[in-house]
Length: 432
Image (cartoon, rainbow, N blue to C red; front, side, top):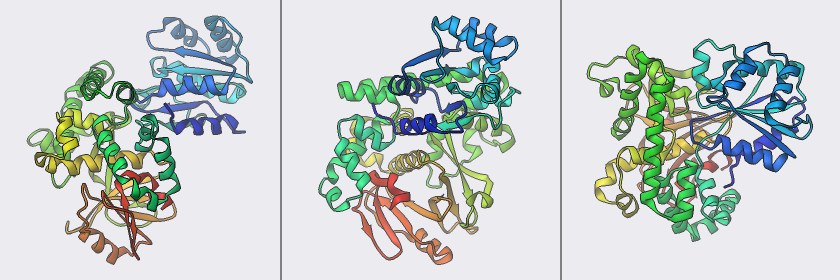
């Protein structure tokens, strides 16, 4: 299974100013697999340390954090020499031994010759519990579920993925049904690596759904295992409300849907916990569309999306036949699923600020506005081929963006101010 992120790991290895690298992301998005695959491809040897329930490692890091002593201990544990040039050191579930996280500072300052990659699904939570975090002494990389393009490659459609990269839309249009069929499959399967691998191996949608249920159950268990006891019920309430939040016509997060009479102060910590874990994407409203968008963020208004479109479908009990056949009963939720998909793809693009826009009167809402650092691009999302774009026109008249994007199942078309970009090509949004 190919992951685009592996190219970033090669760049990290070649960097002159390389620091220990922390790969962030939700559980089961493939962090462990990626680190091991990178070790096998790029190094002569890999020393893999899993800190979960590892008392020997807890003892090793409990004492002083002298790097020579730590390396000796790691060599004794691994049973072989750790070579600075061709050994990759992997620290997995590093949040389970916070002192190991703190040691990264000393590896950077005193032993930068070692190649260290770490992963921890709950690093954000560790920060809130007072861990001595090596600020400025580590590099970060986020890992998400497989994007649609990676899904195409995993399912044997590498040439179709290459065609999207080339942006040859005349050729793409000739094969658009293949892309649409694959996109419907992706809506159901999503991008969680275990679900994708199962689909590749067996083409069994029922087995995919079982895997997704297991992943959701594991997330729920994590709430109890890792979160402070007093906020666990609130985390569950927020988590279980996400599907109904997205099913509304106005998808702004509404605390009253979590619990009648609910208020922000009750659920802010729970939402922050889910965001830090990588289980949800928080997309804030902006009240103006100027660079940098961050400066115009409205902290009180936001939407919450799931980490994965397949998990959202599983959570709502969406059946395979409904999705693939386009059942009328599915029409209302199709927009939610499509927005979730677009958000998920935008999040995989490096250094992209993702927000949404509404004007003060609420008469204009643009599903997403993205900040590339050089320009602001509004994106209107359509589930089918309905090409009315009233809000985009209002937005355009006010802010006159260089380009506006309408993404739907319709063919690619470039007009003077508007690009119709097929949903299956949304990853090309910043390289139009």
